[in-house]
Image 1 (cartoon, helix red, strand yellow):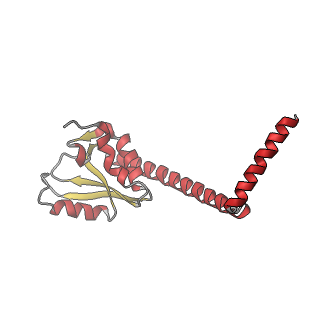
Image 2 (image 1 turned 120 degrees about the vertical axis):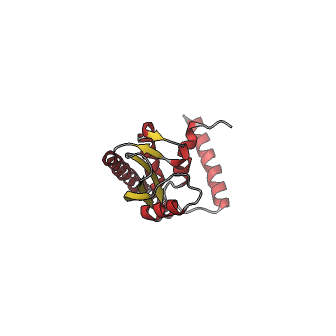
Image 3 (image 1 turned 90 degrees about the horizontal axis):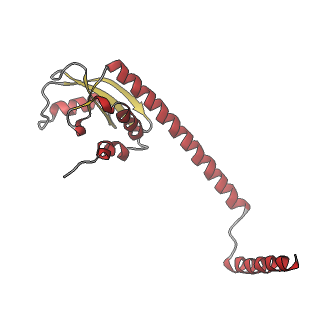
Length: 167
């Protein structure tokens, strides 16, 4: 079975538009500078505890949360982060381990969250304005009964035909 490059970003796409927390976990059993990045609806510390309790986890050592930040659009933010640091990926694709400076990684996360939150605000504003416009349009032009629409359209066709013939 062949894997495509798009499969690496499938999980964040499921969380588009969902608020959550982007976290960085460090493991004492791994080389310094290796970090696990992910998102959760709870907290980074809860995710670390979950991974430490997981008996199927083949990674030695204890996970600790070194950074977490709330995002309005968790999936989009993580997707941007993973695309930005894809060249630092280490290990299996689905584990999201990266070898990068922690301060640089925090900067990238903060920038991506700020950018996606701003895009979410703009999208919400656009949707609100569109909804208001459509509501006003309905009030100004209420739907007419079907018979009146039929007569109006026949009259309009006749008018257009007559004006074309007259010119």
